[in-house]
Image 1 (tube, rainbow, N blue to C red):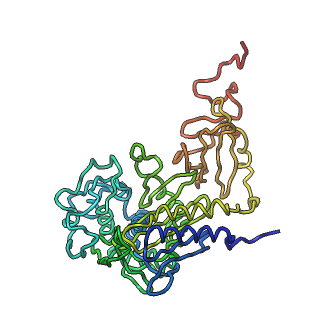
Image 2: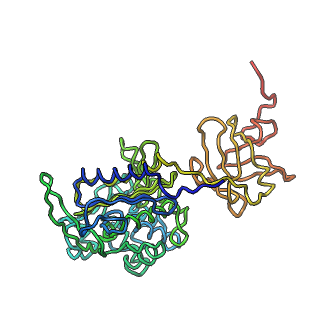
Image 3: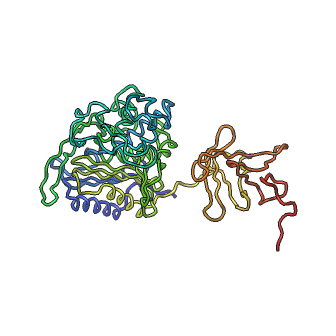
Length: 458
């Protein structure tokens, strides 16, 4: 018997709508939209307030501010995957003359380049990009505030440099690259550089009275790669799904996984928050969320995805302050994940198995620590302790018959089979650690040897 659960339960939908409604009312936003996706599909949408006399929906555009940054980061990772640059390259190698060329591309992606958070005055979000026609105008006279590579310091100017880097290496504008390499392949037809109706207008709501003031919607010029985009809840749910699963037309699953790894240690006392390559990382309630929040005058936006639970959530509003987009979007994820947990894929046997690989499965011993090795899809293996937490890791099969660690302590390390002269298996070598079939068996290839008198009691 098979079952389909493509629609949410009525109780879940009511809880989602209640959260959106309380966010719009409590946050005093002219309009607000929330949406939830799963499996690459939009599962639910709900709007409150009014845009041009209508309740907004998942197709209504809002400005998304710094959610633009993950898009820029994806463009940079594409250049890396094509071999056009290395993340360890200094900026100067590809974009000379900035004055901060010693910072690396990886440091810019993870906000550890030591750059100032903002441009020199006037406030760039409320002024046209023509005020800063050159990178020197963006960076100012004192662009570096911290030692390079030592700490996380969020930097809008850093992502301006990354946008210019994309243009220098690709030979087209940032807008052209974004449209051709991300928006069109992923079908994000309502994500644009300037507003396209139906779209919300940006408003400032008076802090002590229920009255509003229109906010300017400036073209940000060179700062566009840090916060220019307009988008919809539907498009952003689709983009969030891509950040979880990858898409070979844009980036592989392995590369988007790399983007989700913290780039630098968190600040002391802030262990539940981090930043990868263009992605914010938060953890709470036993759940890890990946995504980004954004704001520009008149707009706030939040996007999160729980990769393990396959739930994406977006919140968009057209108020300068009030609704808390990150909190609301996280609550939308929680409501769905708690009420309707992900149903696992049905177990299926492997299509075939190499007998030599099957022979390696079962218990192995690192000293006296017992581990189990099992085969997974595509010739990969996983090595897990049989008791306690230990150093569990998954490994990807390589063409030369070895495996490369994907996570945990052994990420990037090589696992290989060592055979005796007669072809039989002697042991496993994992980054110089020796795993044997028995714990300290005489004659085994254990570094330092094994006492010839064997095991004994008191």
